[in-house]
Length: 178
Image (cartoon, rainbow, N blue to C red; front, side):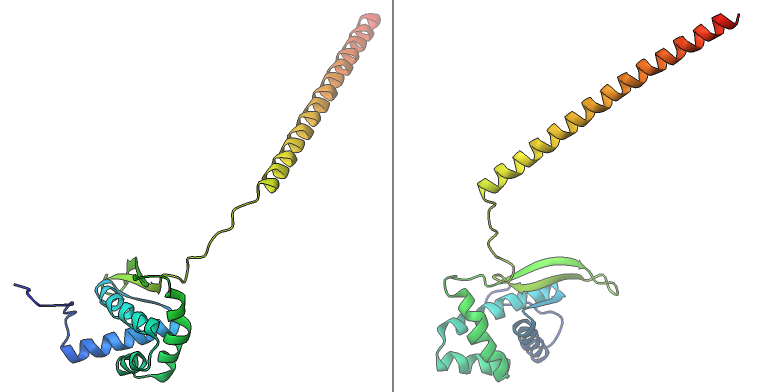
């Protein structure tokens, strides 16, 4: 039974697991996106969400708790000054785990861990006036193509008439020679 058992084993002892998670959390704060195996990514998501929640509190005690885990003043500063303010309005789910590929050496499933606000930028909707001007340009282009086709047809008809006249003249010459 798994009563009161939290987290994943990841195949290592507790001290190695703790060190690995600290390292992954530090890398995520430093680079804001990392690639790791799926179980590690899911475990990292729990830890990094807790760190961002500490950053949102922005108290001395929260900074000390974050430092206790990260053990790097630069990372704590970046967490509290750059990363946490992005999520002030968001109640949770600060990190995203996206499954990406299988690792070449051992075929382990890999995933990309990134902060949720990193890629979410509002796309601007095209202005309606621009769309109407584009449709007018398209109409003008189509009309120009139709006019060109009519000119080509007229030129082909003229060529056919000339060809008929040449044939008639050639036949007349052939008859006159005979």
